[in-house]
Length: 127
Image 1 (cartoon, rainbow, N blue to C red):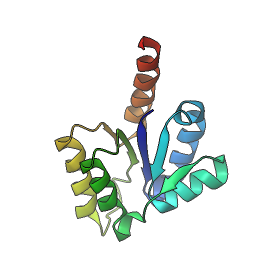
Image 2 (image 1 turned 135 degrees about the horizontal axis):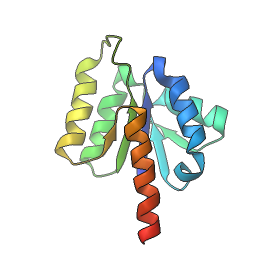
Image 3 (image 1 turned 180 degrees about the vertical axis):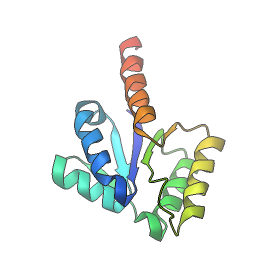
């Protein structure tokens, strides 16, 4: 069982909700964590068990980076809004850099998120 972090900027929350709904059966096989607002949305609408750990702009991205550094996160799905400036851009860049340095797969768009889910499914078939 992998630990998968689910994060979405406010403008991407509905996209994240639709994506998780589409992949719900596969995602339920893993431990799910997410920034507080994303976790709350997914839990309330889809009746999932996503553990929240902090609001992104208030340090949630840094808290996620710390969990990655502790080896507690296997994948990150972070649907970003690249068209809107964010006051916590440095935190976002820190999170991305932490994933890169620690070789943790990170999806920043739907195509890559779909790829990670497909990869998880194929890994289970091989085992």
